[in-house]
Length: 288
Image 1: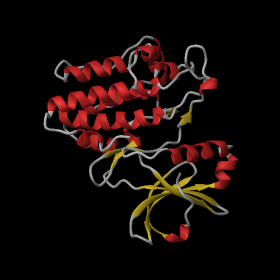
Image 2: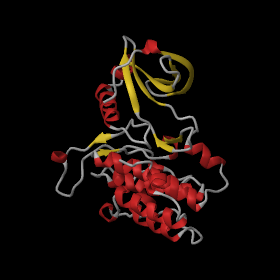
Image 3: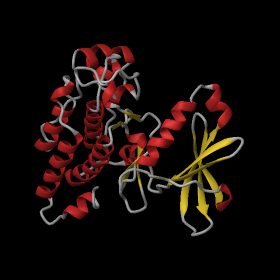
């Protein structure tokens, strides 16, 4: 559980970005000189937009997650104007930016980064937490070059007692349409496999270096992708194991998709086959 902290112990250096309720600042912790990201959220905006429960839920779930490939919450505090969430700071930039600048990711890079993302999702899924907004803008690199998942604004805890007879939950449509599963995009009940679909779209983007379904309107997505099952093309020159993983992961039928644990295990096998000298430690960084 992340502890309560004092804002006076931080020196604000610069603004990293702005969001719906405030901004995120790069800050130095005076006691040890380490740098963190401090998320400022305006209380009056949260109340005005009736997002009190949403913010409390985000903070509570962030406090449950402590994992190498997730930007972890290290503390929190509040005053009369703001709620502050203190998080690990990533200094290597967003995956989105790297994808737009890169000419190509090698098979080794694709499998390595994808396995870390799958590992992060396997961890949060083990806690019955669904993310619902996997996309390159919500992934970044730390100074070591490790990839990390951030922005848990749409996470939701799935309670077994609310599950229907088909193993789904009645949840709102959430996320970014081009990465959104058909069941989520058409307002149907869904489950953890919606994240698996989004992961497959992301993996396609990592390999192709193109935005999936670029130029599609929501109407086109609804009719061609969500209802008719259209998917971006899988090129024959790509590694067969990755092509198969993408194809099964974005299957139109949610029950046909593998779990994130199964995806992680498959990617780990593909990576070690490509790089026989690699160790479990190198791939998983003590996955727990």
